[in-house]
Length: 342
Image (tube, rainbow, N blue to C red; front, side, top):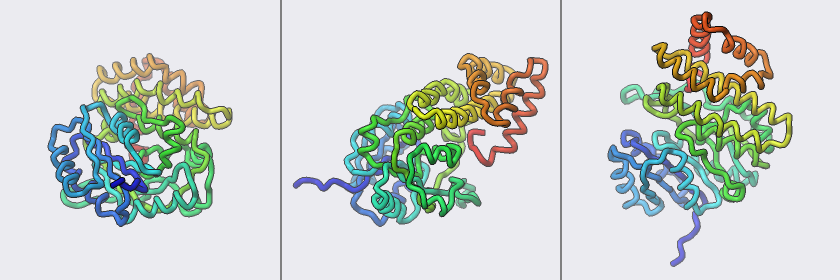
């Protein structure tokens, strides 16, 4: 008997998230949409995650277990894309959850608009014992008025300032991804920035649904909250790949806009270098920052007063290092609630 092609492929990369995985998988298998495949990619977990996935796959034939050696979340998502069969793809991180009915709601909407992509909203939360502490704002700063626009991805990059990079909270037409050869970057961190920009540069029909269908957990130890010297170094080293997205933009207006967004990301990385606990760590990261010429990139793309001010402070001579540190700590304190990178 030929197996029916599912309507949607849910791709879940898993690495050592056994504490959250049951809640994550429950949020998918209990959706009110049965005609889907759930591709769970175990990326070499060592904490019991694989056993949990196997138990679920034994009792739900929609779950496809792909077990592989650890190569990082990018490789795991890319492997999921390769074997996906449905017309539409949606991603879920293994410590996050979908809200009830979310998959069918966003699936119906992307079909209705015949979109390459659909952006929807979500809400962040943190665990405090057995209680979830929810953010008082939606994850993306969009509202119902934005539902009126079906536009190319570059419109949304300009409209939002690029602040919609999270790999969750989007559903994609699989043919759009495959035909454009889109995949997550090979860096260990920041891979979602590269994929996001490549998708938005290529997409012709992108819509928005003001529906909080995704619950994003912030937890210690995740890539998003990792402020370690290693995590910062990897983000600096991956900047070149993010920068390569500019090579695919023909319209100079949008190239300038995206270059400025990349410059803001580089500025955040400089702040992360400066707020280290020790001078040794700070100096080591600043050396990497300068070697990657991120300071030069900021100077070349300082298209507003904020980036101009960053460039001035970053260019201070060494004897004003103490003032740079105060500035960086002030930026972190001011914007920490807006970006988990700080």
